[in-house]
Amino acid sequence: MAISQHGAVRWWNRLAKPAVFLLCLVPAAWLIYAAFANALGPNPAEALIRSTGDWTLRLLCATLAITPLRTVLHKPSLARFRRMLGLFTFFYGVLHFICYSFFDMEWVWADLAADIIKRPFILVGTATLLLMLPLALTSSNRAIKALGGARWQKLHRLVYATAVLALLHFFWMRAGKNDFAEVAVYAAVVACLLGWRVQRARHKRRLQA
Image 1 (cartoon, one colour):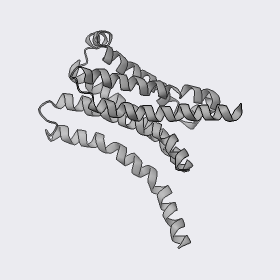
Image 2: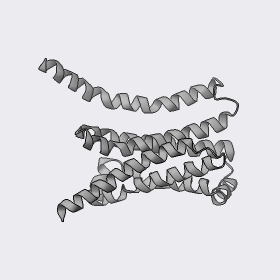
Image 3: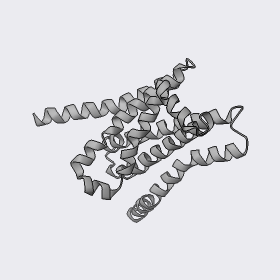
Image 4: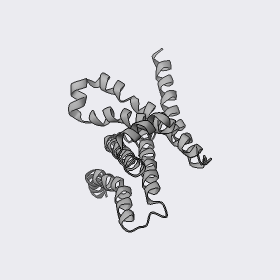
């Protein structure tokens, strides 16, 4: 029995990351198929923009959930998924921006710049993507060594600002349609994930005092 359990753990360790990688690609694959199959509804452009934005926010929440889960469940091995989820968050964020730039702005850069300045939720969404850029660029082990662990950790705390801005972008986007049900769900998730970190930091400070 012990041998079979060891074998199961070994197979899990071998297959888990490829499985998560493929799962993260499923939404993009579905959207590509649906676009070609004319299965995105009456407004395909809006469906693509909205879906890529939704998946950006979902994967951002999943990335932030890794640390609480590995701590609460005593599963430090979960940390190996954090980088992948973070990079897929950036990937879907880039797709979201590309879909908006292409379908809404038709790659007219002057109109794109004017729209970013004119509409606050577009400005916040663009700022969110720009904040994710240095996180994606410094996600490698080489970047950690080059920056040093302490500076790398400080830089990657930008993910918390990214989460708040992404939520604000989502809120303003839905405010135009007076639709706040999903916003409330994501707000609760982000509040729990960030609140857990604040509480943990306070607990550490009390122990050190």
